[in-house]
Image (cartoon, rainbow, N blue to C red; front, side, top):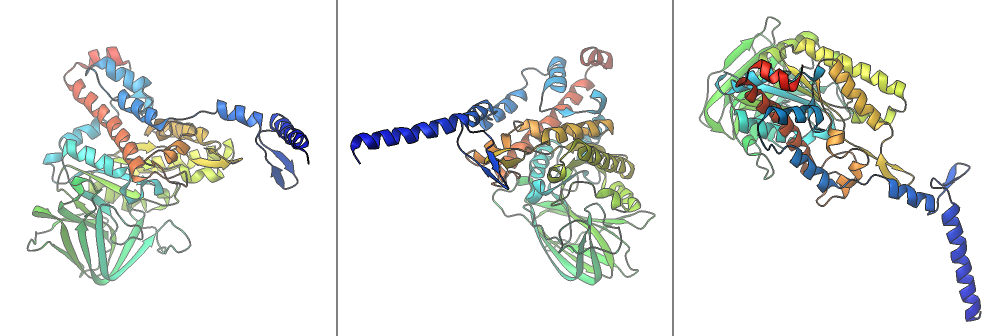
Length: 477
């Protein structure tokens, strides 16, 4: 073939490709069960119009929005009504958290910590997000330790290690086909229970991981929450040569909290059990201040709590001095959320869970943290799951309508199509499943949540020095 013919052939091929590029639909051409795809002009225009999220710019904007130039009512008014990183409050009631703040201010002098219980799906496993909130609150209000955890668990913790031997059997109410379930609904605060028969030993050690927060590296008190104990049941706690006397609190229903306070912070402790009992949880705390419990429920949509014994939950929350309950769910429901009707049904289920927590923990405030952005492959591109924005707005409306606060994680991280950019960020802020945050990403999320919450506390402190009339004149009703 002559050179001229080769050139004509090549130009012909390029021309055909160019025509195909101009005419081919962006979403491809369906051929039976298959879809033919080709690079197209329409696809290029669509990609150009598609929102691109610059993660560093998003996080810088978050940082700047928390930067207070002056501690004034006008700053707080702008924050509460205009800042996308704010915690949305029922009826815009800026006094919503005041009872909790009063309790937190007295936390350092109380006989037991003020507990903040953080429930969530796998997004908070390994103490992600919870650890940032715990560190921030303990720095402000005092406290130490990792909070509440199960005596046995299939999910490791980044904050404490434990080993159990003896007659322990672990039951959980939610999980895959390998989950062992109890023949009753007495799962307790952690949606799981450990049945002790005959006795056993539980050894605890504070974390040695370099990435762990400073306040989890030691604890000065240990507690066991249990019920249905046999007449000969007993439990003792020791740490090296320290053998403190127990403090026992018992409800009329038999749920019991026994606590040992060591004379100094320790890194390890051993609990020795005798007899039979249902163990609902163990905690390693600072004796006073704030305790933040991390309770991950992998694969859960947050609709299981109403199946747990209500009397048991009421007694447990009362014993544990719980001031705030955080519910972080929604992501696991996205695969089935294919219509507005389905989302409405989920709203109703979440409303029942919030109402349930109001009943079992009337002294606690409730904060719902919505789902993050989630990436899904559509026509070869990673985009936000369909209907995720609708889910976010629906959950916010449900929380506020049921007297719970709401924090919008989806919009804090950049909104639509932001997850793909969090995955691409260096270092990666999310994993290749386009769902879960890495430890570095969870640190950013936890920091933003903590700062938003503490902004409300700073405003509470400012209001104490001002007349209610002056505050209301600026803030509105």
